[in-house]
Image 1 (spheres, rainbow over the protein chains, first blue to last red):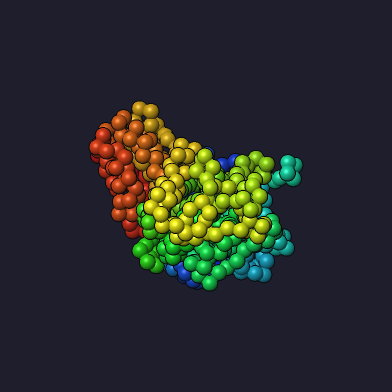
Image 2 (image 1 turned 90 degrees about the vertical axis):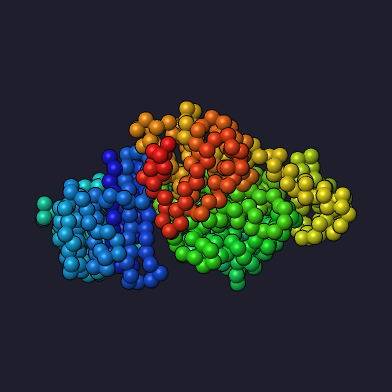
Length: 178
Length: 380
């Protein structure tokens, strides 16, 4: 088993934190994990990506080479980082933020992730966690229990309930598509 | 400490892991001037060190940071700084002072693409020779080079122990990719980590000769402020610590400094090998490149190529004897590195014509991929 996941958007959306949480959940499931990231000098804005590899075997080269799951949360990220997936892969876009959906050989899912987060928690800032709910429900990467545990362990103290609500909203939004 | 320790698997960033290991190894003082891609080390230690009775200080620049580290270590505190290329250049003068006055310390250099300000946040392995010869004059050097987050843990502890054991600065060379990525690490309990402390004098202050070395070439070191008064100088000095220009004493000092590291070479040389027993072609690689090489070597084996990997974790002193041994057993050594060819020079020197040595350089700010190394292995 080897899964390569790329989460891309703009700086400030919390996608690197989302990548850390996903990797941690993979670790809780007993897998080898590596999480890397790339971002520009901007604290907010610009293009940002987090990559996660989850594998049953030790991971040598830590960068994603052929992602089987790609999340896109901004047009700029799509322009900067390759955002296509090959046949059999999964492309998930925040349809509220991405105007130009790239052509893809993989399966495409459009979810208004940030709107879903905003309706569930009243805060667009939780969209990264909603994205994890969407992504994991569609692509089945880690166990839902490990994902909840990782979210609760990594988000700022006092925001656990809020973020778990955002996660579950993502799970429900994705389940409705399947 | 047993029982109170929370030893378990943690997802840790390389830089964060370096901090945890340093604290377990006894770090009590950090001075730095944060620079990408090493900044998280300063960030984490600013928060962590005061909680364990240590001190963190952000200095006005890299030169002052290195000076503060030397001063702090002279008082007996295990000390460290962390930087990247441009900062490592600035630290060289005081690094030479630390080597010459025999002040233990750990200097982390998370390399980035150079020269000069270079390519911030992009990886490179261009400081291999600077780690050896960055400061002027003959001087002893120990430089260690991890290739994973869990290796960062082990190697950081070893860096502190070697610094204390040999009274010398130890350079921890890291790659941006490893420093910034997160991996699973099993953090041991404090009582599971072997920690070495510098030897302190047993004689009375009045009888203390600061540079009177024991039989292992390492003089006992008194903490400043404890009644032992001694002189630490960048000039050539005799056993009293005061300057001398007497040729026999000058010669004695520099030879002792070089010998104290060389004589312990076996003890401080750490390497990893994979599929080397029957290899006909060996890849010699460090850090992030060793990871790609490991993958390439495995793929090559699946294709029937007798490839192997030799990964030096200690790059200075260079494991010449081990390379010479490999060169006598293989047809070819390939040295992939993210610079224009530095490690390959040492490998060529050590191989001494016993086999073909071929370098491979990638210098565009991106790590070398397994496919690139596999292509070189398939050229055989």
